[in-house]
Length: 96
Image 1 (spheres, rainbow, N blue to C red):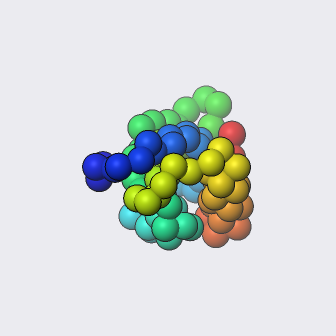
Image 2: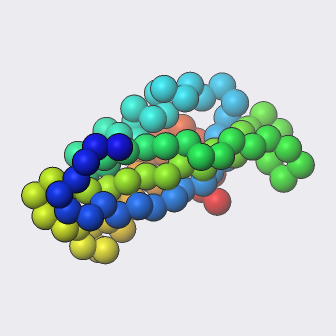
């Protein structure tokens, strides 16, 4: 994670996505949602009973930050919503 002058905001997101979705493409798309997405880290990958056939459950830590100021909760929420919509639209993700 880059060193930051202002406190980052960390959010988690968990979703089902097809096993055929390429990890690198997923991370790249998440980072490209907004310049304030500073860091993306996969912390859990699961396939099992509660996961639909042909899918994985992925969970990511997303770090939002602006190098010049502290982000507001509203700004972070707006970007996180955009990220959620992009995952649904581009990757067919089912947000949990």
